[in-house]
Length: 141
Image (cartoon, helix red, strand yellow):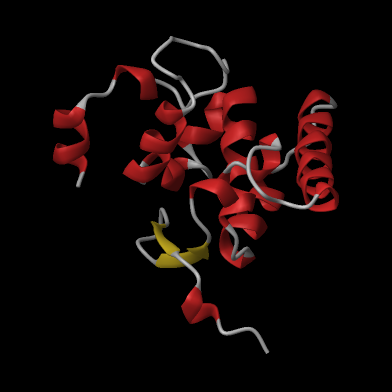
């Protein structure tokens, strides 16, 4: 049995006020972008989930139930990394099911770290992350 106490955790405050714990760190969050130490098979699974959700959006299907399941039942920050990409693809989800992602200051810091001090190097940073400075982070904390 795995002892989850050895893993780093992040708390995510849901829209209903409850908190959920997700396991991982910055590397885990970026596994869906093939950045970090994840096995190729896991990266492929995460990318397949992203593609499935985007394909459903493109077909006009409602994916809100999938997003709720991932947020309410998922335990890995890797899944939240996928959801952040879905939010970039269809930003309206940040106003509803993906709002909790916007409340986690570490995600902005992590996304900003991909910018390498040049705007839009990766082109997928969380909306406005490259515009934040230390004052913004302190106010959020």
